[in-house]
Every structure is written in structure tokens, then in C-alpha cells.
Image 1 (cartoon, protein in one colour):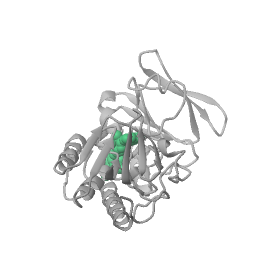
Image 2 (cartoon, protein in one colour; image 1 turned 90 degrees about the vertical axis):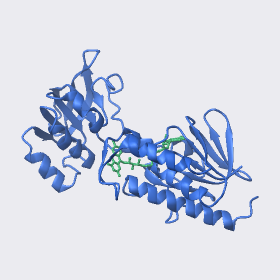
Image 3 (cartoon, helix red, strand yellow; image 1 turned 180 degrees about the vertical axis):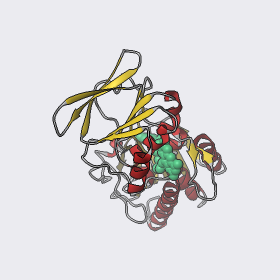
Length: 307
Ligand code: FAD
């Protein structure tokens, strides 16, 4: 068995694995894809002490740093469940089971989907989730951003510099984004914002997006917009479905409940990063949390007598 098994290979998982391996204990890391969300990121300007880097470069750095230690890395494997018998047992979707004395869960998060007709059908054919990645494909076109939180308004400001026009659709009657962002978006000549708008369908010609339908929640009227692209920016969902039937407690949003040492409700299981209740989902925060969870798990190990 491992002494510490890290689940996830993003910033949180990489940090946890490095902190664990540096204690000289048997450390494993299992991840579907090394790098996590960082792999989907273009410019990163808030990774402290590095004024500018890019996702793939930072991911390669994470992997290289973990590989400097004797960490047993298992990629392209998904965790399916976790339970405690004598040891902690992590079952993989492949059917294999990994045993460990402690576990750090760092499975991150993914984009939340709208769940309307046309969204899945036109994914990568006009429906996008990453403005940094896909914005340039819509140069000179009219696009919509669904969601008026920080990520939606940031996306609108970002896209406004590339595309012809951006329409933001927000379900609620007010925007949830920071005032400074809203002011900036409103000051741009090619951004308009529609509140009380419930997107009901994304439509197209079978090959690509041609628009969307929404209901005006005040008048009840159905409306249509002609568009080349739809950016869905309605938040992140934690990758914690595999924990639903476990003894690891999740909050209403599916985030793993942790204490200040990263401990979860299941003894020996710690967690870090975007998959947890941490309020701000960022690279530096995930790394700090990964270190905390590994140190918390190490503290647990030296106090426990499981051989
Ligand atoms: P993730 O990066 O999500 O990594 C999760 C890991 O777990 C992956 O290896 C994944 O494959 C694995 N995994 C998931 N489920 C399973 C499973 N069941 N079994 C096994 N493995 C699994 N933050 C910043 O600080 N600055 C930025 O500029 C910035 N820009 C961003 C831009 C975009 C487009 C996105 C999407 C995010 C951005 N973020 C940014 C946020 C940042 O990427 C995240 O906060 C950070 O990656 C979270 O790290 P994590 O390790 O918790 O999770």
C-alpha cells in the first residue's frame, strides 16, 4: 500500500505529492489528466513571482517537479469510489483498487453546463466554455455570453476586444459580478447586457450555431438572437460525483467539506483545491491547499498505528 495516495494531477495534487514525497513516504498520484484545468488556460498573470506564463508551460513544470521525486504516477485513470476498511481503498473505473494509509483528494472542477437543447450538439461548433481558448475563432462575429457573474463579465470584456458584438444574458434581475467589472463592460461600445433572460435553446443549421432562444422572465415573451457563438459561463462543478456514496461529506454544491488542515469527515482522507469548500478557486490557492492537505495527512500518519 501507499502511505499517501493523491487523487488528481492539477496544482493541488502536484503540490500535495511533492510535499508527501519530501517526507520520504511511499507516495502515489492517480489522475485522469496531468495539469488539470491549467491545461485549458492560456495566459496566467497571477502566479506569484512569475509575471506571465501559459497553461501548458505551467502544467509541464508541475509534472517535471513531481517527477523529480519518487512518486508513483498513474495517469488516464479515474477514481470511482473510496472506502475505509483496514486501509483506505480507492477503486478506479478500470476495476483496479489502490490501497493507502492516507489519501489527498484533489480532483478539481469543470465547467457547468446549461443543459438546454442544442448545447451538447453544438459543442465545439459554436458552443464554447473557454473565452481564452476559443475567442479568436469568433473574430468579427456576434457572440453571446451566458452568465453575469465575474467569469461571464470577464469573458464579455475579453471577447469585446476580438468579436464584433457581445450580448450577455443573465438569468437573475441583477448581475453578480464585481461592480468594477460591470462598469467596464457597460463602458464598452459593443457589449450589451440583458437581465431576466432564461436561455431555452441553442439553435443552428446542423453544422454550426446560428443563434439562441430565451424567455424574458418579466414579460414571459420568447425571444431569439442571431449569433455565431455562445460562451457558457455559469460556474464550475466540483469533480466529486465519485464520493457521493462515500463517508466523505460534501456540501450542497458537491464541494468536499474540509477543516483548516484539509481533513475531510473520513479519517485519513484530506482534500485540497477546487474540489473543496475553499472560497476562491485559483492556482496559488490550490497549491497552498495541496501542501496543507499533505502536511495534514502526514500529521495524521505519524499519529496513527495502521501498519
Ligand atoms: P484541477 O486543476 O481541476 O485538477 C484536477 C485534477 O484531478 C486533474 O488532474 C484531473 O484530471 C483529475 N481528476 C478529476 N476527476 C478525477 C477522478 N475521478 N479520478 C482521477 N483524477 C481526476 N487560476 C489562476 O490562479 N489564474 C488564472 O489565470 C486562471 N485561469 C483559468 C482559466 C481557465 C480557462 C480555467 C478553467 C481556470 C483558470 N484558473 C486560473 C483556475 C485554476 O486553473 C484552478 O483553480 C486550478 O487549476 C485548480 O487546481 P486543482 O488542482 O484543485 O484542480
